[in-house]
Image (tube, rainbow, N blue to C red; front, side, top):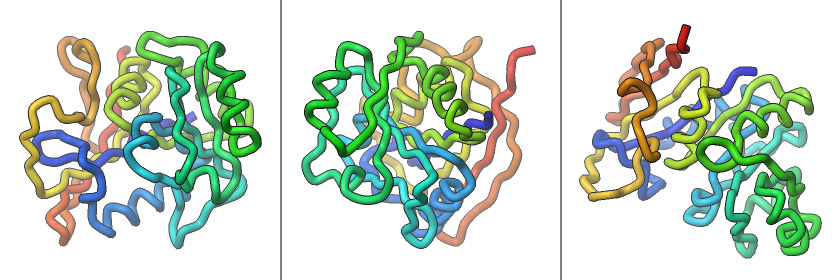
Length: 213
């Protein structure tokens, strides 16, 4: 299975507040959704935004899985478009939250349990579930903690990173990947596959993760 992590950051590496990416950046993200079988997003992104994970031309493929992962099980429902349009999303959470979430969501989503991994719930277990449903490629859409967990578990193959022409400077603001320690020794090494400047002032970068031999 191929796993792609996509994110947009300021030049100082901040991913919040959202909504500063251009239409060009959005189109590239939507095209990546079109070419992957599932998306997975952290619950905090759902709390702070109103994502639907649509493809190009606003499409919501009935065969594409949209998933949210939440260790706490604190999933907002009211006013969230994810639960009102398209195929039912999948909510991944811990076993102890299953019953309460099913009662709250009723028939708005499929609730599945995951074992704990080294940093929250196991992303590898989620990918195994996707694979069992015939998914061959997955897009990870953030946020900071989910990005870190996926990189720390070693499940990511490629990164699509948009550098936006902005500076945040906010102390402690959410970064591209936030976690308790270095991801490598000290860094996780990447191989640059392509670098494309946009007319919007954005820089579109495509990296491959250098896997340990």
